[in-house]
Length: 209
Image (cartoon, rainbow, N blue to C red; front, side, top):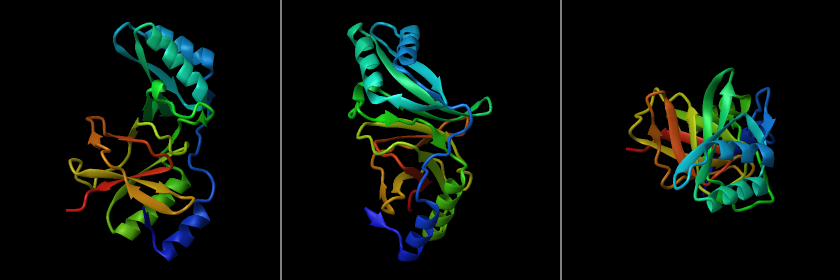
Protein backbone atom coordinates (compact mmCIF):
# COMPACT_ATOMS: atom_id res chain seq x y z
CA UNK A 1 0.00 0.00 0.00
CA UNK A 2 1.20 3.52 -0.72
CA UNK A 3 0.37 6.79 1.00
CA UNK A 4 -0.21 10.17 -0.61
CA UNK A 5 1.88 13.10 0.58
CA UNK A 6 0.86 14.89 3.77
CA UNK A 7 -0.55 17.85 1.84
CA UNK A 8 -2.77 15.62 -0.27
CA UNK A 9 -3.80 13.67 2.82
CA UNK A 10 -5.06 16.81 4.56
CA UNK A 11 -6.96 18.01 1.49
CA UNK A 12 -8.56 14.64 0.85
CA UNK A 13 -9.64 14.15 4.46
CA UNK A 14 -11.46 17.47 4.31
CA UNK A 15 -13.59 16.44 1.35
CA UNK A 16 -13.79 12.66 1.62
CA UNK A 17 -14.73 11.84 5.16
CA UNK A 18 -18.17 10.37 4.59
CA UNK A 19 -20.09 9.31 1.52
CA UNK A 20 -18.51 7.00 -1.04
CA UNK A 21 -21.42 6.99 -3.43
CA UNK A 22 -24.00 9.66 -4.19
CA UNK A 23 -27.24 7.75 -4.66
CA UNK A 24 -29.41 8.97 -7.55
CA UNK A 25 -33.16 9.37 -7.15
CA UNK A 26 -35.32 6.27 -7.29
CA UNK A 27 -32.96 3.78 -5.69
CA UNK A 28 -34.48 0.47 -4.67
CA UNK A 29 -34.07 -2.46 -2.29
CA UNK A 30 -33.70 -5.91 -3.83
CA UNK A 31 -35.52 -8.21 -1.42
CA UNK A 32 -35.21 -11.99 -1.39
CA UNK A 33 -38.51 -12.24 -3.27
CA UNK A 34 -37.35 -9.88 -6.02
CA UNK A 35 -33.98 -11.60 -6.37
CA UNK A 36 -35.65 -15.00 -6.51
CA UNK A 37 -38.29 -13.86 -9.03
CA UNK A 38 -35.71 -12.39 -11.39
CA UNK A 39 -33.48 -15.46 -11.06
CA UNK A 40 -36.36 -17.80 -11.84
CA UNK A 41 -37.25 -15.76 -14.94
CA UNK A 42 -33.82 -16.14 -16.52
CA UNK A 43 -32.39 -19.36 -15.07
CA UNK A 44 -31.64 -22.13 -17.54
CA UNK A 45 -30.26 -25.60 -16.73
CA UNK A 46 -26.54 -26.10 -17.27
CA UNK A 47 -25.91 -22.53 -18.39
CA UNK A 48 -25.00 -19.11 -16.99
CA UNK A 49 -27.82 -16.57 -16.97
CA UNK A 50 -27.94 -12.91 -15.96
CA UNK A 51 -30.64 -11.35 -13.79
CA UNK A 52 -30.75 -7.58 -14.33
CA UNK A 53 -31.51 -5.01 -11.64
CA UNK A 54 -31.47 -1.22 -11.71
CA UNK A 55 -30.49 1.36 -9.05
CA UNK A 56 -30.27 -1.17 -6.23
CA UNK A 57 -28.90 0.44 -3.07
CA UNK A 58 -29.73 -2.31 -0.58
CA UNK A 59 -29.40 -6.09 -0.90
CA UNK A 60 -28.76 -8.56 1.89
CA UNK A 61 -25.81 -10.88 1.37
CA UNK A 62 -27.76 -13.76 2.86
CA UNK A 63 -30.61 -13.29 0.35
CA UNK A 64 -28.19 -13.22 -2.59
CA UNK A 65 -26.39 -16.34 -1.40
CA UNK A 66 -29.62 -18.25 -0.81
CA UNK A 67 -31.01 -17.42 -4.25
CA UNK A 68 -27.71 -18.38 -5.85
CA UNK A 69 -27.67 -21.72 -4.03
CA UNK A 70 -31.30 -22.46 -4.86
CA UNK A 71 -30.69 -21.85 -8.57
CA UNK A 72 -27.51 -23.92 -8.53
CA UNK A 73 -29.36 -26.89 -7.02
CA UNK A 74 -31.49 -27.01 -10.16
CA UNK A 75 -28.49 -27.07 -12.46
CA UNK A 76 -28.35 -23.40 -13.38
CA UNK A 77 -26.05 -20.53 -12.48
CA UNK A 78 -27.36 -17.00 -12.19
CA UNK A 79 -25.20 -13.89 -12.12
CA UNK A 80 -26.68 -10.67 -10.74
CA UNK A 81 -26.15 -7.57 -12.88
CA UNK A 82 -26.71 -4.34 -10.94
CA UNK A 83 -26.89 -1.27 -13.21
CA UNK A 84 -26.75 2.36 -12.16
CA UNK A 85 -29.01 4.56 -14.27
CA UNK A 86 -28.79 8.20 -15.20
CA UNK A 87 -32.21 9.02 -16.55
CA UNK A 88 -33.07 6.04 -18.73
CA UNK A 89 -29.49 5.16 -19.57
CA UNK A 90 -27.13 2.78 -17.77
CA UNK A 91 -23.88 4.52 -16.86
CA UNK A 92 -22.39 1.73 -14.79
CA UNK A 93 -22.80 -1.90 -13.84
CA UNK A 94 -21.57 -4.39 -11.26
CA UNK A 95 -21.81 -8.11 -12.01
CA UNK A 96 -21.85 -10.39 -8.97
CA UNK A 97 -21.76 -14.16 -8.64
CA UNK A 98 -23.98 -14.71 -5.56
CA UNK A 99 -22.29 -18.02 -4.85
CA UNK A 100 -19.13 -16.07 -3.99
CA UNK A 101 -20.73 -14.00 -1.22
CA UNK A 102 -18.31 -14.25 1.70
CA UNK A 103 -20.14 -12.21 4.33
CA UNK A 104 -23.84 -12.97 4.27
CA UNK A 105 -24.42 -10.65 7.24
CA UNK A 106 -23.63 -7.54 5.18
CA UNK A 107 -26.16 -5.42 3.31
CA UNK A 108 -24.66 -4.36 -0.03
CA UNK A 109 -25.19 -1.12 -1.92
CA UNK A 110 -24.50 -1.80 -5.62
CA UNK A 111 -24.82 1.78 -6.87
CA UNK A 112 -21.88 3.42 -8.65
CA UNK A 113 -20.92 7.06 -8.26
CA UNK A 114 -19.38 8.66 -11.34
CA UNK A 115 -19.98 12.38 -11.03
CA UNK A 116 -20.45 13.56 -7.45
CA UNK A 117 -18.31 16.24 -5.82
CA UNK A 118 -16.35 13.48 -4.09
CA UNK A 119 -15.47 11.95 -7.45
CA UNK A 120 -14.36 15.31 -8.82
CA UNK A 121 -12.14 15.89 -5.80
CA UNK A 122 -10.52 12.46 -5.96
CA UNK A 123 -9.89 12.93 -9.68
CA UNK A 124 -8.36 16.38 -9.18
CA UNK A 125 -6.05 15.27 -6.39
CA UNK A 126 -4.76 12.15 -8.16
CA UNK A 127 -4.21 13.99 -11.46
CA UNK A 128 -2.17 16.59 -9.60
CA UNK A 129 -0.33 13.95 -7.58
CA UNK A 130 0.49 11.70 -10.56
CA UNK A 131 0.59 14.46 -13.21
CA UNK A 132 -1.49 12.42 -15.66
CA UNK A 133 -5.15 11.82 -16.55
CA UNK A 134 -7.31 9.58 -14.36
CA UNK A 135 -10.92 8.44 -14.27
CA UNK A 136 -12.64 7.64 -10.98
CA UNK A 137 -15.38 5.16 -10.11
CA UNK A 138 -16.95 5.29 -6.66
CA UNK A 139 -18.44 2.19 -5.07
CA UNK A 140 -20.59 2.13 -1.94
CA UNK A 141 -19.50 -1.19 -0.47
CA UNK A 142 -16.36 -2.20 1.44
CA UNK A 143 -13.72 -4.65 0.22
CA UNK A 144 -15.71 -7.82 -0.36
CA UNK A 145 -13.02 -10.45 -0.80
CA UNK A 146 -15.00 -11.75 -3.79
CA UNK A 147 -14.33 -10.91 -7.41
CA UNK A 148 -16.91 -8.64 -9.04
CA UNK A 149 -16.85 -7.13 -12.52
CA UNK A 150 -17.33 -3.37 -12.68
CA UNK A 151 -18.17 -1.52 -15.89
CA UNK A 152 -18.60 2.24 -16.12
CA UNK A 153 -18.81 4.92 -18.77
CA UNK A 154 -15.97 7.22 -17.76
CA UNK A 155 -13.83 9.67 -19.70
CA UNK A 156 -10.56 8.05 -20.80
CA UNK A 157 -10.14 10.24 -23.88
CA UNK A 158 -6.64 11.28 -22.84
CA UNK A 159 -5.44 7.73 -22.23
CA UNK A 160 -4.29 4.78 -24.31
CA UNK A 161 -7.22 2.39 -23.88
CA UNK A 162 -4.96 -0.58 -24.58
CA UNK A 163 -2.67 0.28 -21.68
CA UNK A 164 -5.00 0.90 -18.74
CA UNK A 165 -4.45 -0.10 -15.13
CA UNK A 166 -6.65 0.23 -12.04
CA UNK A 167 -5.93 1.19 -8.46
CA UNK A 168 -8.10 0.98 -5.37
CA UNK A 169 -8.20 4.01 -3.11
CA UNK A 170 -9.33 3.95 0.52
CA UNK A 171 -10.31 7.48 1.50
CA UNK A 172 -10.65 6.61 5.18
CA UNK A 173 -7.00 5.73 5.67
CA UNK A 174 -5.75 7.59 2.57
CA UNK A 175 -4.00 4.64 0.90
CA UNK A 176 -4.02 3.33 -2.62
CA UNK A 177 -2.83 0.10 -4.21
CA UNK A 178 -2.58 -1.41 -7.68
CA UNK A 179 -5.36 -3.87 -8.46
CA UNK A 180 -3.54 -6.92 -9.75
CA UNK A 181 -5.14 -8.74 -12.68
CA UNK A 182 -7.81 -6.05 -13.12
CA UNK A 183 -7.85 -6.88 -16.85
CA UNK A 184 -9.10 -3.43 -17.90
CA UNK A 185 -10.95 -3.41 -21.22
CA UNK A 186 -12.96 -0.83 -23.16
CA UNK A 187 -15.98 -1.76 -25.28
CA UNK A 188 -17.43 -0.04 -28.35
CA UNK A 189 -19.87 1.96 -26.20
CA UNK A 190 -17.07 3.46 -24.12
CA UNK A 191 -17.54 1.38 -20.98
CA UNK A 192 -14.38 0.55 -19.06
CA UNK A 193 -14.59 -2.88 -17.41
CA UNK A 194 -12.37 -4.45 -14.79
CA UNK A 195 -12.49 -7.14 -12.13
CA UNK A 196 -11.66 -6.53 -8.49
CA UNK A 197 -12.27 -7.60 -4.91
CA UNK A 198 -11.90 -4.01 -3.72
CA UNK A 199 -14.50 -1.43 -2.75
CA UNK A 200 -14.10 2.29 -2.15
CA UNK A 201 -12.79 4.28 -5.10
CA UNK A 202 -11.41 2.75 -8.28
CA UNK A 203 -8.81 4.88 -10.08
CA UNK A 204 -8.34 4.20 -13.81
CA UNK A 205 -5.22 5.53 -15.49
CA UNK A 206 -2.63 4.72 -18.10
CA UNK A 207 0.12 2.35 -17.07
CA UNK A 208 3.57 3.80 -16.66
CA UNK A 209 5.73 3.41 -19.75
